[in-house]
Length: 511
Image (cartoon, helix red, strand yellow):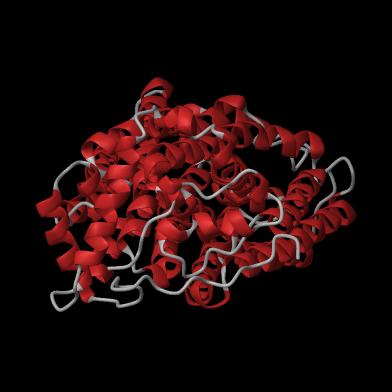
């Protein structure tokens, strides 16, 4: 069957495959909390851009457009300067993520998380105290460097630390905290929307999630894989004992990590060049290009950025639009919990496929409702009933994303790379994610103005394409230890022509 799932290889002898300790839970919660800063920023941006005091100070042209006699509902917020406020973060994140691959190898996963949290904290302080556009954009750029570093290091850290049997559930914690950040930001936007300096409070409070994750990261050790890679074997042994439990024999896992590291170092070649070799074509196409790109062309982050703007555009008042964004955030969090439960029981592929179908149907549904109610020119007034129907459809859309492309887009790339290309592979994937997000966030409001309801058909078309891609080209990786994931490519109907088992990719697991 094209791209079908494969039988899961049994647990490696002597290696803890499924035991969950309190230490590993705490460690993974702290690492996953890096998603807080990314989620908070996604949620805060759209709400702040609907606050009149913020618009009056930085983007007065939008208020003038809004007070027009008969404004086009799709075009009120069409401003390249306004979208630059949102999208500048993702351009900086792109640059940071590409640098982070090399820095992670030198400094370790945990230290990059610390660096990211500290940088984000400074950017949040600048944004809260901004007095002009230049200061606002500079703060956004520092926020971008922060999320670029953490988005590169945290998913890898989670995959390396979590027990293989439950790697999916632990890794979805990153997306869960992104969802918590979005929801918290939407609630704060609602609470501060009537305050004269509400936008300053909303932007400045980004220091809170940054402080939480940075402070937490101080008290966790680096991942054993990263410590071994940097020749800190004693620390790696202590880290393994800490997360696997004192009564667990960690020697087989430590020996495997050391052997993997030695193999990676023996190949004295630049990882950036290795990754383009034919045998790593599956990882290049799936982990660095397809999944990060497809995650963004679902349209989810654009809708999260601009949810209040979008709901205002389709008939909600300012308060109602913020409440609708909160509802969307709550649906997203619940759906991520569904993913945490299902991902290691039913696999990655089934969630990708089901979520893709659900998102496609809802995007087409939104386009049809808007086409029938607002007209092709977007000047007709949408009734409250139809506005609520749009919200319901968007909730089903957010749920589909929350248990599929949301968490799995961080999980799958972080588990398919062999050690020798893992940091650079994750960096390039996160870079692709940020590059796509930058382009989409910079063009969304203009696209909404010109394409109108067709914008949702645009995203629906991409969702259809990515669902077909998953069905054909993504094998199942559920339950596999990281060092065994390469076996799925050898059995896949398409990727096996690129991959052949080599001595450096085959580890002797008999201890």
